[in-house]
Image (cartoon, rainbow, N blue to C red; front, side, top):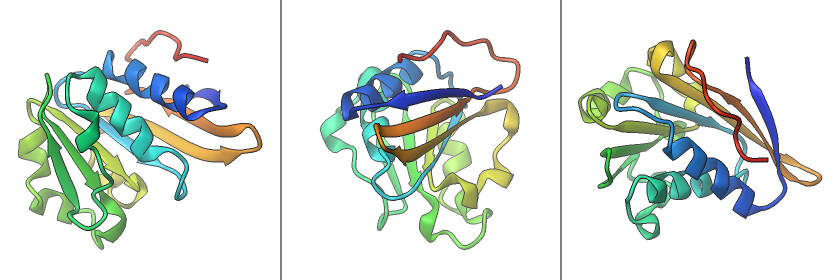
Length: 149
């Protein structure tokens, strides 16, 4: 069942990323969707920091397609906006990288069909009058504590 949150500030988006960083497991994939400026990269930056990586290195991989970050779990950060077919994700080496690490995919609706649902966190961010909203769907069957308000 999805969890809905209002994120009134970028700090609230960062708190959601840190919360997520405490819950992800090796092999998990965070599927991020939402329009430009909705906070996808802000969330990733906080997630990377929570996992012990350098948040200053986090940038949207729009042109590189995939950025790798060193942290307690190696993190593969993909921008799927420019991928034309879901199978192109495998061509980037994504599956091998996340075996013992974490995958984070922006514009995930383009490749979600090839991600095993049992390992997928689905997060949809949207603009709202009071900042932004987040709809969070943990992997099926995984109990999670409530995210920050």
